[in-house]
Image (cartoon, rainbow, N blue to C red; front, top):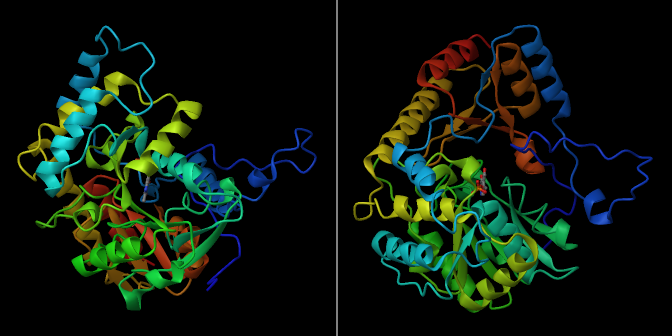
Length: 407
Ligand SMILES: Cc1ncc(COP(=O)(O)O)c(C=O)c1O
């Protein structure tokens, strides 16, 4: 069933995303570039830039980029490994053997799953690269790729359209706890799942992991890719499981970006089905040559600081801080005019709210000095939702609530 075949939109953290291809572009870019969805929020961004230029104090709850710094041990470790005698040389595409061994150890400790570091782990330049190189390794032109909406726009963009494939959009609806109907992805080459979820902040229950595992086992033509970018960013004793606890016929993407506040380090790893990961490594040998070894080794050391299933204290503190900010905003929004519902969750730094019209609400909030992201940026079915990211200090969240209460 094609739920939607229209083109979706793309919000992005990348300031360079907003490139309009000129109609008289003599370079004649590839069709797959032209087929990428349009960037709908140029108007909103222009307004924000204008307001900033006029000296208006804007509180930015729009971007999914941590404002808290990485733990000191991680920064120190990056610096220390810069002096490694091989730090300046090409890394291997699959990732440093010692680093993969450390990931295997962490995975066993955290999820109770044994991985073969030789074939079931690939170090990536963050999960974005992992997702896109993986898709390139398995998606053929004209395949369909199951893409949840609202969702992280890269699944439909880089993973489907840039591979000349067709996204099939699976709706995440409040009445289904923002979980997709797995059977809607029948016949797709890849099914992307992402919990804890961006943009809704929602988590999946164990039943859903089991259903996804069952789908993966009974649909060998469909590769289930579980994007676990927010897996470790949780609070209130919530611990996200791994899909590999339920099936080995899937690939899961992990990333240090949100786990340890280091989006700029570009480091993560893919785990799971060995044959698929071999294919992904083939792509990496052609495309990126792997992540810098000093960053890889710092990641390995950081993972080794886990105490059983628990992150090191510095990470816990930062996760708690996001959790407190998120709760504060979730409660504060309940009294804001125009907010019909808030969907709390024990993970991610996103607050997902229901409104009458996302663009109108976001414009009004901006006039009050608060930047939010319209839901339609994550899928055409989400135009009655708005996302806030609590990536601003607690006092700014207080101020944001005060300003929104004036709406
Ligand atoms: C759901 C999801 N997956 C993947 C990523 C990419 O993260 P990174 O490449 O920094 O690991 C993001 C970034 O915002 C995200 O929201």
